[in-house]
Length: 533
Image 1 (tube, rainbow, N blue to C red):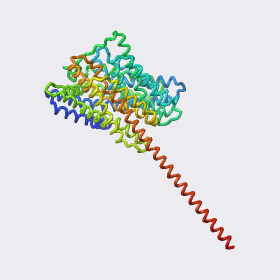
Image 2: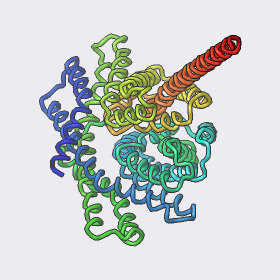
Image 3: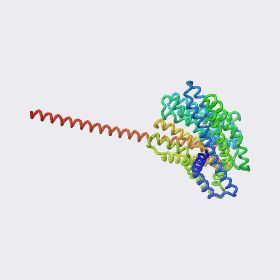
Image 4: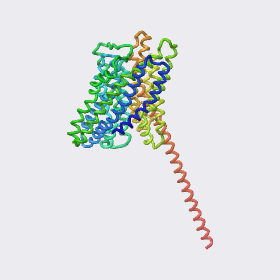
């Protein structure tokens, strides 16, 4: 366990190193005021690295094995209702423990007190649970994944018409934050096990796309929540401007404040696991205790991780956003944020371990036609563009729908020309690229920029409307990037098949000619022998 933890710390450190380098460069441009602020960033960074490493080790010894056991046991049940019910419950519980979602919920609640952070987590978790159930139903019934996505996103944009503007970007951001370190591994393990045991076709196409379908659920849930809360408050949704993460509490005070929230996130998984593991799966006590004890590092890691974000990362993200709007700087200086956003988005993505895993998976599925480095670079460029567009939206104060509607329309139209395998991979990749680091750093950055824009407008522009959206951009660009690779792969595959067919035909033609020539030679010899006789 100790060696595994140290290895995970090493991987987490190197994954976050590009982000640390960019933070250092930004701080060199605009130094902090005191040594205490530098220490705050360093301590916060250490907490994020060690907390995430401990969290991932606990995840591997508790939540992931439970997900595989649950999925593998579904073959024992003939009724579809059992499969869907278990998928809903475990999808919900895996999501409420998601660190990125906890970070986002706190950021939302700090701006709009009407939104309770715990309630927001459970609403988005319910959306994921329903989405997982729909994804499992598709696998069991072997429904075409393209039709599922088309119908779900038609529903999403129908709800957008009736939802208040403050909740539109929030809904897409909430969806991206729900698919991270806890939910993605658990739901994928669940889906792969079910695909291998319950699905009729048992192909790679079945297991892919479950994250993409599940992530639509929170969008619908938050949009409905926005409609309800808007109606209850008579169309008034007050928000606090400007965005401010500054706090006088030390690290100890932040940790104490997070103890209860983290317990509420992790405890449901423990409660549902105990009767399921003992009564339904009838695990040996030793195995059961190992799984339950594995939840302890999950809890402690999540507590340290979130506290590090609150103490350091949120502060530095906010500071970088504000320093480009200082009165001593020229007006054009703020537009350099577009370049900063692009580099930050690309750096976080190219060093993300989950992106590397996705690249390896695609390289194996395409038999080496698309290399894993191609996937990493493509997604890094796509996420860099997403970050740039998000900051551009804030600086120009353009409605996010003018960006999201065309991007999603392109992604949905591309499904017509994309192989079904890559459709699932594309929509899954949207959940892979938007994780805890994005919520920890890029969201405070964009909210800080929105706060400065709101100040310049005299508080007229709501941060809730203009500030959120970074995760929604990061969730949609991979859909286009991966499907583009899928179309290229399909073209190359057809070309290779056509060339192989032409070579086979040429070989067959040569063979026929050889046989014909040999036959003619034999006929000539027989004729000569007949004449001689």
